[in-house]
Image (cartoon, rainbow, N blue to C red):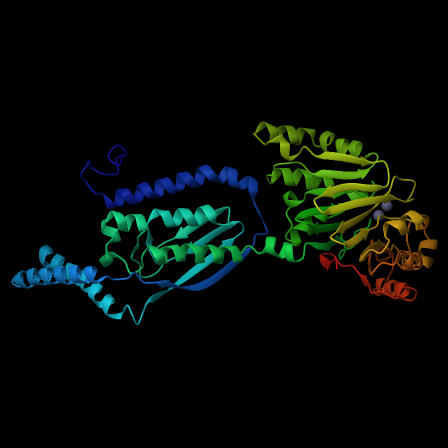
Length: 491
Ligand SMILES: [Zn+2]
Ligand SMILES: [Zn+2]
């Protein structure tokens, strides 16, 4: 092959430079092959974690037979080495004999200390970059070990980095039984028992670098307020968007201005969202939804979003995505994008009650008046805990019922009573008095204020805090102001 490529002169030539050139050619070809595909899945936020471990691996036990053979071989090679004393130090056979007697001598030395020093401490580095892991060890492994690590690793791809230290072969039980060169006692300090432990300890360390699932099990129910502003551009607050993480599901309530960007800042890629609940079709609540759907598709999501919303949601999605981006979608399909990742499913809510169930997680909703639109408020129940996220709304008995005994109420509070009385759309919204009345009558545990429109109009930097204080005057539970990216455990 190298000769045909002109990298060496003949079949017999070792051609070190030519071999290096061939390795370089294969690397560049692999990069050129993978790059166009990798470019379609650029991830700006990846987890980077590193851990260092010392594994105490049991040393291979030297039997009396092993010892006797090693002493015999050592003596033989030592005698031959001494017989060649008249040859120069660079003589190949003399060097070989010297090396072999030392090699067997190592077995004798190890036997002498195996009772007092039974383990070999081995430093391992485990590095996680996103869903890829690099795991080091100091050995030259028989294939079984690396394959077992890769097959059982939590990472999508696991690179086992060998010879990262003073390495020897690490034989498998099968290779010891077969008696090959690399499995002889002189060739390795650690045997199959230590190899099994290396696999298990490496896998344990890898598992500990992927804590999300475990922490999800510990605390499976939390809210992240992704956007806590409203229509106008407020540099500190994006448009309405809340992330509910429950039972391994990621569900958004609304997807307003800058939601996708703020999700990115929170380390949440668009393709990881399972479902979106839309409260109503005011643009400040839905304007980032086309971006969420298209970017998630672009990033490689395999199934489309589940979208739950009021009557008209299907028409909105058709116009805002399928019609508006028809040319873009066609061009991506033409270069082989799988349409399944964009094919969302829509549920238009006609009646109050249960609207989505994912295992033990139940999502229910209630209509309330807002600006003459079909308008939904959502409640999430999981294992006896609950959160309600309101839409822009008026206070109604249906809303009180939806919020009944909820642990957390994330409630819109667009402004003070005076402010809302001064604007033509003020009657569409909640103020501190109605928020407190809702929280009190429903008996909720605590309140988080969102949709803070008044901040965009007021010159008073403390206006939101003043609203929270006003709610506290007639509601005894905790009341807080939401912030973009703020996280709340539901408990
Ligand atoms: Zn709004
Ligand atoms: Zn609205």
